[in-house]
Amino acid sequence: MYELGHFIDGKRVAGKSGRVSNIFNPATGEVQGTVALASDAELSAAVESAKAAQPKWAATNPQRRARVFMKFVELLNANMNELAEILSREHGKTIEDAKGDLIRGLEVCEFVIGIPHLQKSEFTEGAGPGIDMYSIRQAVGIGAGITPFNFPAMIPMWMFAPAIACGNAFILKPSERDPSVPIRLAELMIEAGLPAGILNVVNGDKGAVDAILTHPDIAAVSFVGSTPIARYVYGTAAMNGKRAQCFGGAKNHMIIMPDADMDQAANALMGAGYGSAGERCMAISVAVPVGEETANRLIEKLTPMVESLRIGPYTDEKADMGPVVTKEAEQRIRSLIDSGVEQGAKLVVDGRDFKLQGYEQGHFIGGCLFDNVTPDMDIYKTEIFGPVLSVVRAKTYEEALDLPMKHEYGNGVAIYTRDGDAARDFASRINIGMVGVNVPIPVPLAYHSFGGWKSSSFGDLNQHGTDSIKFWTRTKTITERWPSGIKGGAEFVIPTMK
Ligand code: NAD
Image (cartoon, rainbow, N blue to C red; front, side, top):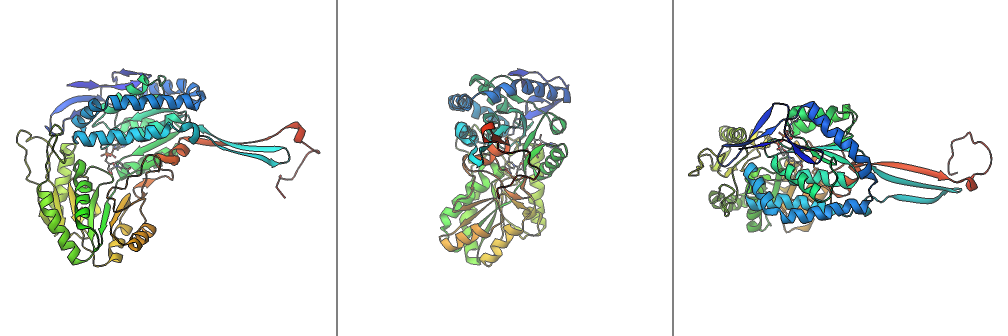
């Protein structure tokens, strides 16, 4: 058993609110620790520390800021095994998948090492007689990030790396389900040379989130989690005068055209549908084969693959996937699977009875495969966030395209085909933020931007890439004329370039 507090002003501190939340081991169902839930006063203490440290950090030249990230990347690599172990123990995902979570975050840290170039701005010489004009991008001041349980390393790094590289101080409020890795990341940032107060981790629940959203000294908020909370955070942040970018849930489709390589498509669906037990916002949860023959071939290929998924605790090196995160998540997923059966979908592979000897209390669910799913069913409309793949049969390409187009969510989508025309038409017409052509999980790399459309995202600037530099900075435009350029007397008409 361990007790996790917060990380404020460069060190770990115990929680003082008297409120805690249990941290479970998803493989055994046992409580392995507790995490403190911050009070308003604890959040304020973190903001005070950030406020004191930020001006000096913003004034630190960008090469020095970049060097902290160079060292941090080295430390992440050196501590990779330990971090992956802590991550898997609280999240349940396999060790290799936990390393992927860490590496995807590390890549964003590598990207922001380019901050001297990324934060450079525009200059116009001779904008008017003797007039020069330039725009600079300054840090917003104090930023905050509220993150979900499913990527406890990558998503905090999506946020704090660009925010801090731009010269901000940052307050991270991680998921209360797997909060240990974020605290270790903050410790490693200090070891890498970050001044105390620039990265604070405040653990908590809705109370801490509301304290962030209403704190007058926090200028910008980044959120990733489920859609109802994303919508709430976006609205509340805006009402309190803060800049916000909020990313929500998903229901990602994969269209399989009759000419697709069926082995490739089936392998892609296995990884994208069942990897991390389906607990990824870019998981494929709907497969749409075009034409009856394609659908029959797909089901025939997938069925034995889903039946032979290897499911185990993170300590099983050969496991394809682990348990889901909590008892509540397990119950929610099970009730959605039941609803699919009740509403008439065909459960081709039923993973509900899966049991693992020695881990009877763990939150394991076997892989489930549904066929003949229709758009009116709850398993189609809802984000299940579990190891459940639904096959919706479409007669034509247009009918297939219509499905993700009309879905509430718009995070990711993929098409499998050999036909360049079909792929190009699809990428151009689809109303979804991230598109894969023969790529099942089209998560953009760190130097491009990540973000969905429709109910998957609120706000107009995405995570990482150049969008993140814009989000974490404000533009200031300076117009200057020196006395030698000033001619004539007072001007009462608005100056124009006539
Ligand atoms: P969640 O919405 O339950 O929690 C996210 C964060 O919000 C946590 O830090 C949590 O403490 C906080 N929170 C929870 N309830 C709150 C409330 N009532 N008021 C204020 N704050 C609250 O999400 P989760 O279960 O941790 O993560 C899974 C969800 O995240 C899925 O819907 C998934 O699709 C989504 N997700 C989206 C992306 C993306 O980029 N679009 C990426 C990863 C995960």
